[in-house]
Image 1 (spheres, rainbow, N blue to C red):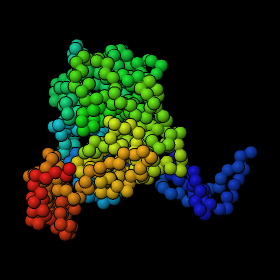
Image 2 (spheres, rainbow, N blue to C red; image 1 turned 60 degrees about the horizontal axis):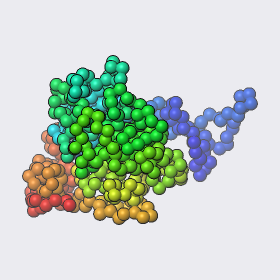
Image 3 (cartoon, rainbow, N blue to C red; image 1 turned 180 degrees about the horizontal axis):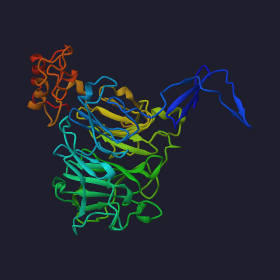
Image 4 (spheres, rainbow, N blue to C red; image 1 turned 30 degrees about the vertical axis):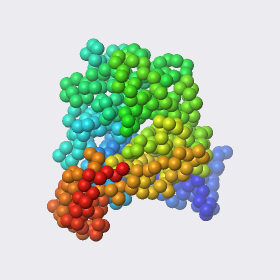
Length: 478
């Protein structure tokens, strides 16, 4: 609840999903010994939860970007897709809605493999796989209810009772060593799958992180405190640009080990056993591997309860906090944290002063735009730290970053690095589209006008724009 400068009282009602206003005079009335508020004289939102529509979002976690397509997990088992998200106006309708059920928290941002397939936790927390790009004719998974099997026995991976199936959570693809990693949060372990291309037959779990055998599923392997080889409530996982695995060993509301641990690329590549007892080499948000980390309720100048992570093209890291902060006056501005060199320095160098309720999934796209899902205030933000470094509020002792260049100045739109035919075609495919006629063929799934590709900013894409890309042939943004 709160007061404005006219002394109106505002009271949030979580049951009816609305906010009531009570204006002066407060004519209370008695019910027995209890003084009750008068009837409200204003309601800020219609009673009831988020109404399903193409342009609204509800409380959820999960976001992924692939080329010019943004995929966002929505409330009520929906997932929405925006084409050319970079140039959409505020509040734009989504282009597609994926049917089927999806868990409320579905960490998507690291789970696109090298064949442009998006791996998600589908209905009942089972693996579903979608081929990107998504379109009106391609909204169903190419594989669904995909099971996992142990590489040594060929038996299905289950709970220790041998009956209950495994409910998976976050997934992340290792683009350096080409393997898929999958979190089994309820059993406190992470699976490594080298034969991820064989999802149509059998996916084999050939390595486990966090546990030392198939039957142990307890937090921190049942020990009284964590160590470099244990996990507790691992949620999001993400690979940096060098192939190091970052594990958010924490969940919302300060649960789990309240830390981020890093399993280094060489250790992952050299592991040979099914249960190699891998040891993390770096820890964030905790004094040591053997101690529980800080909690956001009382922590300042760093993320007390990390929930999400993202890496830009220079391997600089952003961490999303869980919505709480030790200084209530700064809470809305201290939810995103920037690390210039996270492999060297494990304390943040700056906060990102964006007003936000609670971070959900976060990711950087190919142009180093940072996309942030706010799962409390139901929106997705896009900012660019290279274009607008003013977002960064540096802390004492900060390492000053060399940020990626502003994407608007570089026509190297997509991989591979270096301006090439793929970048030229992104402009040429929009030939004769304009601000006035953005979609000449009235087909939202074909390339339409987008300011990003209007290089000379004249509201018309023509030969001049193409030539301005060609003159940078072979150049890279870095």
